[in-house]
Length: 263
Image 1: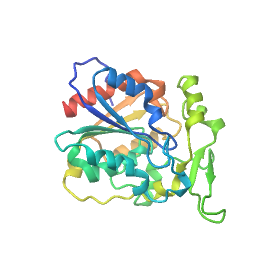
Image 2: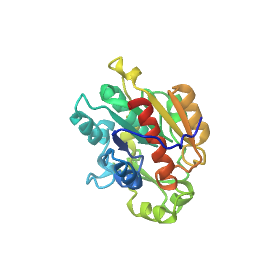
Image 3: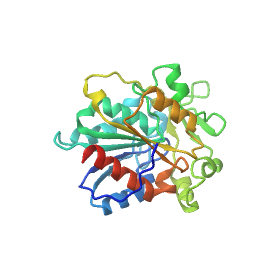
Image 4: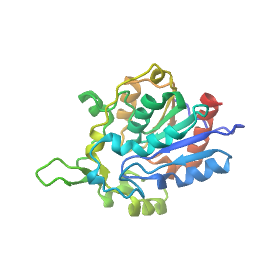
């Protein structure tokens, strides 16, 4: 529960950044600059149907398809090179998936206000503790027909600044309002993982709590931490999007985590 912001001397690390629902690699632009300027390698991707990826979100109906860009990147990383894997919000599901499949390539997994569930959305308790209640603030799309369950969802544009970026610079909120896309809802609902190796349990995990979060409430964050205790918890007094609202502090925290677990 400490907040680590001291300056340290670091070696070079490879950070792989996973965006959350509705976002894309673009949301990391400040952090990408800071990490690269510090001499580190950074990879950020658009998950299927997100960011600049051309796939229609309503056509993405399985989590495996949604997560394929991350799996492809991790499959190409040499076994000798372990990464610092960072996931934000719903990107925590992709992070847990990666721990199951590529645990031997991950030096540390960092969950930023993220869905941290060991086996994904497998039980009602997982859904209750790990999924934000967005029914009243989201618009739902029915790509399979109005009589079928929604295939994608997006927070109403007029509410995004208030609940996603209330402590962020208004220009970042304006940029996000132009770039956010509907999230492949059916794909996220199928995020269920089965442990295939002992390496899954060996990957160190860090949870970064966002204390002013209006999307993933502090109660939900603490419930996930209690249900699957990480190796370390760090608190940031930010909104749901510290990559916008507090990029320098997030940068320092990530470098501290990398040095602690991957140095």
